[in-house]
Image 1 (cartoon, one colour):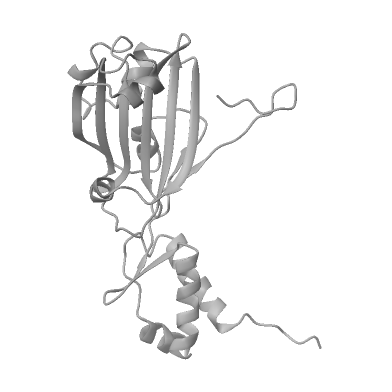
Image 2: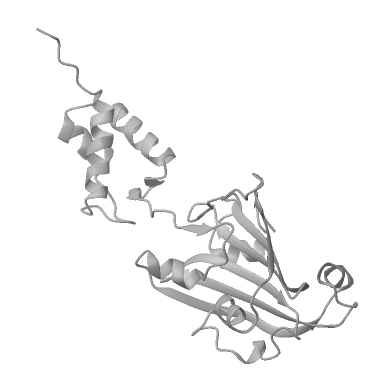
Length: 246
């Protein structure tokens, strides 16, 4: 008779936890049973339970908070890397509730370094907005945007708690080209404060430049907490076999 093989106990514990999460019994931010309770349930040592919890934490399925316990992690939402999409639509599509906090909405004089990047003369007028987008009360994206006034002359008069800047700009100025550059970084203190992250947590930063009719229209920096968000894209080769990205 062939000997029956069983899973190691720590894997059984991992699967038990994943089953509870995947069926919706244990939901995001919910505290799960303690190591001692799981050890009693499976008749194993806390060391065995600890291994299961450590692995699930490294896989971003659990969050362990010292002195508080272990909690079900929020599933990271993913934004399109090559497409220009609305953060409000992304949040709503996964069942969330989008909220926008307007941090800054003003006209400024473009500093020489910025003016050079966006094709303006030094100290020419430029619109500047900073918006914090949340899923309910959890910060998901900080959007820091510069807009050429001639592209969207009424930009400063919009209610961006009702429509996102992205939706508004696309409705009045169809984009001809877009350039995306992504990097991981430790953000400045003001960004960390708005995103409610500590000084050790990295951000995903998406730097975007858009063109309308061959001229630069906007230059934006989008910051996402590394523990709450990811970026992805599907690349379609052109007929020449190369990938076209602007």
